[in-house]
Length: 420
Image (tube, rainbow, N blue to C red; front, side, top):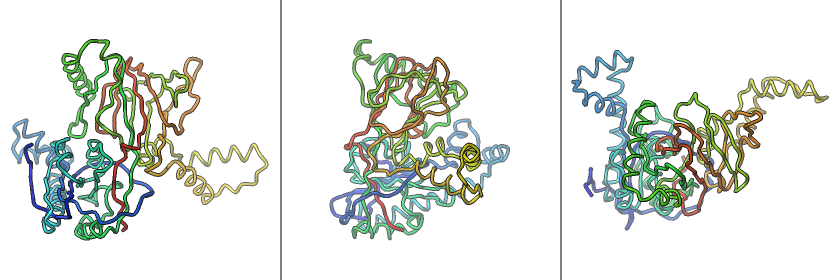
């Protein structure tokens, strides 16, 4: 394996860390277990691609100079100096993490997120994601063993929420975090994740990586067509492709989304929950989340605005003899209680599915718009659809493809809860 950047870092016994940098997800209540001292020997540091680096790479291919880039960004309403400043903040945070580890004698491999692969995962005893929640999701997707710890460090907390990362004071105080890890002053949190089996006609288990690509709809569709063609040239008979369900080599930490690539087009599919009857549906797509993801996209799909709660309460009051004082304080409390009920623990062993904007008529029905399940099966009847894992890994999911979505204890992700 080619080492992208190898540095000597903190030696903590015979174990190791990997540091990563990235972009978006959400963490929740910590249902976790106390730990003894955590002493890795190897750490891989995976860093995000900053907006400055992305713009540089994109326009370098077009032959633009640095001065041309400044002018073009200005025309687009973006600040070259602002992007450069955020880039420096990120890289300084990475240097701080690396030097902190180096002082302790740990061996570290620093890797750009675009270079992060299974070999890096195998090399390290633990992985640190340096960036934001998006990088943390990318890092987690390739860690298939529940025994390999993943730690997130938010490298730019002023611009990134970092729900899946350590508390923000450890961005600049990373040595304090290391000391707590060594002394066992933390808790392990095993986050449940989603596994995917794919089968049926026209399936393509080769993903399109969306993390490093800013694709238009046509480019996204073309990328899927290219990978499908290449895959079909390498695979066996049609019968072999249809009869063997494939476990995809990624795990979903937040959610899986299934739907048409063109968001204005209704998604047509059949769904079976916990081996129940198949039901034809049309909707704006299907989301299936974990407890970790229950405060991310799923929360935004299902939460209620105070205006909606107030309208329902007014109707309820008018049709009953209940004496309800519909003041703003009461409406706030009811709204908050309902919305809080949508969030559940990251270690919860059930999936939560949500059907977005279901179409209900004499042909299509939706018996359950949302709910918990052990397993969800989806058969695509879509035209140009995809199945996206954590917003970053996209699989083609068109007519005839069948996905079986479930959980397994062996797929849990080992993460750290460090008190503020």
